[in-house]
Image (cartoon, rainbow, N blue to C red; front, side):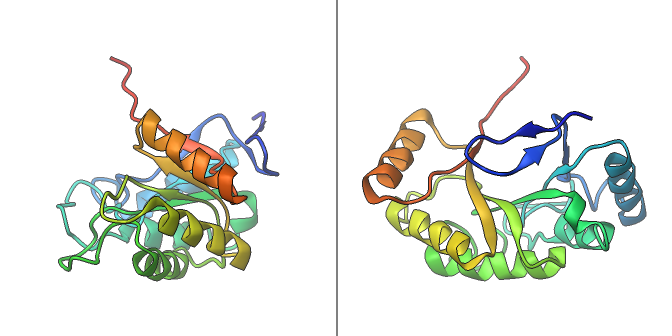
Length: 190
Protein backbone atom coordinates (compact mmCIF):
# COMPACT_ATOMS: atom_id res chain seq x y z
CA UNK A 1 0.00 0.00 0.00
CA UNK A 2 1.34 3.44 -0.88
CA UNK A 3 2.04 5.63 2.12
CA UNK A 4 1.24 9.33 2.15
CA UNK A 5 3.12 12.01 4.03
CA UNK A 6 1.37 14.09 6.66
CA UNK A 7 2.67 17.55 5.71
CA UNK A 8 5.23 19.19 8.01
CA UNK A 9 5.99 15.85 9.72
CA UNK A 10 8.07 12.76 9.07
CA UNK A 11 4.92 10.63 9.38
CA UNK A 12 3.86 8.53 6.41
CA UNK A 13 0.45 6.90 6.64
CA UNK A 14 -1.65 4.50 4.65
CA UNK A 15 -4.62 6.14 2.91
CA UNK A 16 -6.84 3.86 4.99
CA UNK A 17 -6.91 4.22 8.75
CA UNK A 18 -8.10 1.50 11.11
CA UNK A 19 -10.64 3.04 13.49
CA UNK A 20 -11.21 1.31 16.81
CA UNK A 21 -14.39 2.87 18.22
CA UNK A 22 -16.16 -0.51 18.19
CA UNK A 23 -13.34 -2.45 19.85
CA UNK A 24 -14.87 -3.97 22.98
CA UNK A 25 -18.47 -4.23 21.75
CA UNK A 26 -19.40 -5.49 19.20
CA UNK A 27 -15.80 -6.31 18.19
CA UNK A 28 -14.56 -8.59 20.99
CA UNK A 29 -10.91 -8.54 22.02
CA UNK A 30 -9.75 -11.63 20.10
CA UNK A 31 -11.49 -10.43 16.93
CA UNK A 32 -10.10 -6.91 17.35
CA UNK A 33 -6.56 -8.25 17.70
CA UNK A 34 -7.00 -10.47 14.65
CA UNK A 35 -8.47 -7.52 12.68
CA UNK A 36 -5.57 -5.28 13.68
CA UNK A 37 -3.01 -7.89 12.63
CA UNK A 38 -4.75 -8.45 9.32
CA UNK A 39 -4.87 -4.69 8.64
CA UNK A 40 -1.13 -4.45 9.33
CA UNK A 41 -0.45 -7.44 7.04
CA UNK A 42 -2.41 -5.69 4.27
CA UNK A 43 -0.32 -2.51 4.61
CA UNK A 44 -2.55 -0.36 6.84
CA UNK A 45 -0.16 1.39 9.20
CA UNK A 46 -2.42 4.16 10.55
CA UNK A 47 -4.54 3.31 13.61
CA UNK A 48 -6.91 5.71 15.36
CA UNK A 49 -8.33 5.32 18.84
CA UNK A 50 -9.39 7.48 21.81
CA UNK A 51 -9.27 7.25 25.57
CA UNK A 52 -13.09 7.04 25.57
CA UNK A 53 -13.54 4.23 23.03
CA UNK A 54 -15.09 1.05 24.39
CA UNK A 55 -17.66 0.06 21.81
CA UNK A 56 -21.42 0.36 21.76
CA UNK A 57 -21.90 -0.16 25.50
CA UNK A 58 -20.43 3.30 26.04
CA UNK A 59 -22.45 5.92 27.89
CA UNK A 60 -21.53 9.51 28.71
CA UNK A 61 -19.14 9.36 31.62
CA UNK A 62 -18.24 5.68 31.33
CA UNK A 63 -14.52 5.11 31.92
CA UNK A 64 -13.46 4.19 28.36
CA UNK A 65 -10.00 2.81 27.71
CA UNK A 66 -11.12 -0.56 26.34
CA UNK A 67 -10.00 0.04 22.74
CA UNK A 68 -6.61 1.35 23.90
CA UNK A 69 -6.10 -1.73 26.10
CA UNK A 70 -6.94 -4.04 23.21
CA UNK A 71 -4.60 -2.14 20.88
CA UNK A 72 -1.82 -2.38 23.45
CA UNK A 73 -2.12 -6.15 23.25
CA UNK A 74 -2.52 -6.20 19.45
CA UNK A 75 0.57 -4.05 18.87
CA UNK A 76 2.90 -6.01 21.16
CA UNK A 77 6.09 -6.39 19.15
CA UNK A 78 4.57 -4.42 16.24
CA UNK A 79 4.57 -0.83 17.53
CA UNK A 80 7.32 0.32 15.17
CA UNK A 81 5.09 -0.56 12.17
CA UNK A 82 2.28 1.78 13.24
CA UNK A 83 1.41 5.47 13.18
CA UNK A 84 -0.74 5.54 16.31
CA UNK A 85 -3.28 8.26 17.10
CA UNK A 86 -5.41 8.72 20.19
CA UNK A 87 -7.55 11.49 21.61
CA UNK A 88 -8.45 13.31 24.83
CA UNK A 89 -11.28 15.60 25.89
CA UNK A 90 -14.52 13.61 26.09
CA UNK A 91 -16.09 12.70 29.43
CA UNK A 92 -14.54 9.49 30.79
CA UNK A 93 -15.76 9.35 34.38
CA UNK A 94 -18.20 10.82 36.89
CA UNK A 95 -16.11 13.74 38.20
CA UNK A 96 -16.15 17.22 36.73
CA UNK A 97 -12.44 16.98 35.87
CA UNK A 98 -12.93 13.71 33.97
CA UNK A 99 -13.27 15.66 30.73
CA UNK A 100 -12.04 18.65 28.81
CA UNK A 101 -8.77 20.10 27.66
CA UNK A 102 -7.40 21.48 30.91
CA UNK A 103 -3.73 20.86 31.65
CA UNK A 104 -4.26 18.46 34.56
CA UNK A 105 -6.77 16.33 32.65
CA UNK A 106 -4.60 16.13 29.52
CA UNK A 107 -1.47 15.19 31.50
CA UNK A 108 -3.32 12.54 33.49
CA UNK A 109 -4.97 11.07 30.40
CA UNK A 110 -1.85 10.89 28.22
CA UNK A 111 -0.17 8.81 30.92
CA UNK A 112 -3.22 6.53 31.17
CA UNK A 113 -3.39 6.18 27.38
CA UNK A 114 0.31 5.37 27.12
CA UNK A 115 -0.04 2.72 29.84
CA UNK A 116 -3.06 1.12 28.16
CA UNK A 117 -1.42 1.24 24.73
CA UNK A 118 1.79 -0.18 26.23
CA UNK A 119 3.96 2.42 24.50
CA UNK A 120 6.17 5.36 25.42
CA UNK A 121 4.65 7.76 22.89
CA UNK A 122 1.84 8.33 20.44
CA UNK A 123 2.43 9.72 16.98
CA UNK A 124 -0.69 11.91 16.95
CA UNK A 125 -2.60 13.19 19.99
CA UNK A 126 -5.90 14.86 19.20
CA UNK A 127 -7.97 17.41 21.07
CA UNK A 128 -11.19 15.37 20.73
CA UNK A 129 -13.59 18.30 21.03
CA UNK A 130 -13.57 21.97 22.01
CA UNK A 131 -13.59 22.80 25.72
CA UNK A 132 -15.26 26.17 26.31
CA UNK A 133 -14.26 26.14 30.00
CA UNK A 134 -10.50 26.03 29.27
CA UNK A 135 -8.54 28.78 27.50
CA UNK A 136 -7.10 27.58 24.20
CA UNK A 137 -3.66 28.81 25.28
CA UNK A 138 -3.67 26.36 28.21
CA UNK A 139 -4.58 23.42 25.98
CA UNK A 140 -2.12 24.31 23.23
CA UNK A 141 0.74 24.89 25.70
CA UNK A 142 0.03 21.50 27.27
CA UNK A 143 0.10 19.74 23.90
CA UNK A 144 3.25 21.65 22.95
CA UNK A 145 4.87 20.52 26.21
CA UNK A 146 3.90 16.90 25.56
CA UNK A 147 5.61 17.11 22.17
CA UNK A 148 8.73 18.58 23.79
CA UNK A 149 8.73 15.76 26.38
CA UNK A 150 8.49 13.05 23.71
CA UNK A 151 5.18 11.61 24.93
CA UNK A 152 3.57 12.72 21.66
CA UNK A 153 5.23 13.37 18.32
CA UNK A 154 2.54 15.66 16.87
CA UNK A 155 -0.93 16.84 17.72
CA UNK A 156 -4.20 17.38 15.95
CA UNK A 157 -7.77 18.53 16.44
CA UNK A 158 -11.12 16.84 16.04
CA UNK A 159 -14.66 18.23 15.92
CA UNK A 160 -13.63 21.92 15.92
CA UNK A 161 -15.37 24.56 13.80
CA UNK A 162 -13.57 26.58 11.14
CA UNK A 163 -13.55 29.61 13.47
CA UNK A 164 -12.04 27.58 16.31
CA UNK A 165 -9.38 26.14 13.99
CA UNK A 166 -8.47 29.64 12.80
CA UNK A 167 -8.10 30.77 16.43
CA UNK A 168 -5.83 27.81 17.23
CA UNK A 169 -3.62 28.46 14.19
CA UNK A 170 -3.36 32.17 15.03
CA UNK A 171 -2.36 31.44 18.63
CA UNK A 172 0.28 28.96 17.46
CA UNK A 173 1.68 31.37 14.89
CA UNK A 174 1.65 34.39 17.21
CA UNK A 175 3.45 32.49 19.97
CA UNK A 176 5.82 30.25 18.00
CA UNK A 177 4.07 27.08 19.16
CA UNK A 178 3.84 23.91 17.07
CA UNK A 179 0.71 23.90 14.93
CA UNK A 180 -1.64 20.92 14.79
CA UNK A 181 -0.74 18.68 11.84
CA UNK A 182 -4.00 16.75 11.47
CA UNK A 183 -7.71 17.47 11.50
CA UNK A 184 -10.65 15.13 11.95
CA UNK A 185 -13.63 17.20 10.82
CA UNK A 186 -17.23 16.20 11.25
CA UNK A 187 -18.07 14.66 7.87
CA UNK A 188 -20.97 12.79 6.43
CA UNK A 189 -21.26 11.09 3.07
CA UNK A 190 -24.83 12.35 3.03
